[in-house]
Length: 155
Image 1 (cartoon, one colour):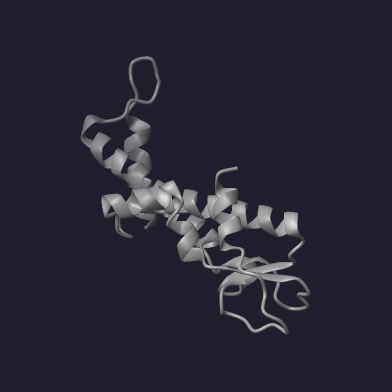
Image 2: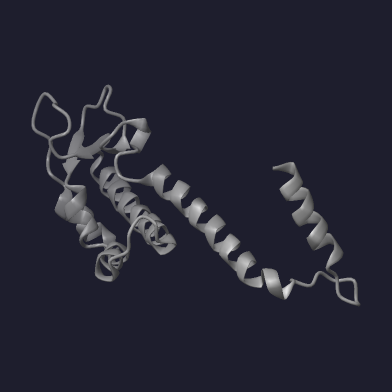
């Protein structure tokens, strides 16, 4: 691996224009662009995975707060909310798959909107945890805030 990095570094180090500025070699231009797209896709994947539904507080299906000690829980159907998010609709419309870099960029934006809306509803209504509907048992049945979260997407 070090040889590859050294050879790439050496190649880039030797390719300079007459002014001493870096000149992108034409042969590597396409490769360089693909490399940049690949790096961006990896960053988007890790960003999406870090905020993907179910990753709240490292517990699956927890979107806001913590289940332990929760006194004011609420439930949401994430799939219903996602169907209303334009970026998620774009993924579906274009038939993007997990191996498409744009899939992860759009999914990350959809996740951000979802979590922002969930947080807004939770804070406005003083819920200390918002979970996927039916994923956890509480002493009493928590309210379903799916429609409130959908409404919060537009605000």
